[in-house]
Image (cartoon, rainbow, N blue to C red):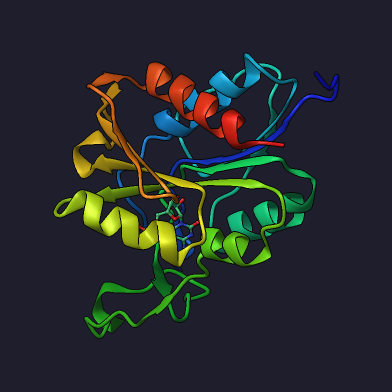
Amino acid sequence: MSSTPLRFLITAGPTREFLDPIRYISNRSSGKMGYAIAEAALAVSSNVTLVSGPTSLTAPPGVEFVSVTTTQEMAEAVWSRFGSADICVMAAAVCDFRPKTAAGSKIKKGSFSGVLELEPTPDILAELGRRKKSQVLVGFAAETDDLEKHAREKLIRKGLDFIVANDASAFDAETNRVAILTADGKVERLRELPKIEVAKVIIERAMDLAR
Ligand code: C5P
């Protein structure tokens, strides 16, 4: 066995997209799943980078912690580190849209037109799928309906090795019930488990595919 530790790159938490200096669009992600994955990775490697959007959690000791706020910041942090990663687990709940323009000062109630124009944010993970060389690439899918069908579509579209499908009820919860769908068409359905136990399985499965 090689003595070089596997290098993990993990994202967690929500991103924020600003309308003006004090208002933003975001989502209910707590970051718990991604932080649990970082913790599980630290149990097997000393080389773990956690790129996190705003959460109320404390980074696991020993992790290289990169704090970001917007999707663009997360994209830059992830893309610049991808070349030196072996396993990437993208658990962040990234905002898919952002306001087309952000006002430089607080929008006054009276001057707001009532219409907010949005544009798509970069898909961080899909870009990793295009750049992928030998890295193991893992994504998440949170859906409210047709979970496994949508997850499989994402797995293919984003060029992933496997995708972790969880019901949208996992947001901010202590436990998670997931299915792991692999690129070769297999599905592994886990029972509802604490997020750290789910994280350990994800890390194990990713390590099986590494190197
Ligand atoms: O397309 P969707 O957002 O459902 O895909 C979820 C997966 O893609 C997650 O792994 C998430 O971290 C990642 N993602 C991303 N950049 C985006 C949107 C999602 O990396 N802009």
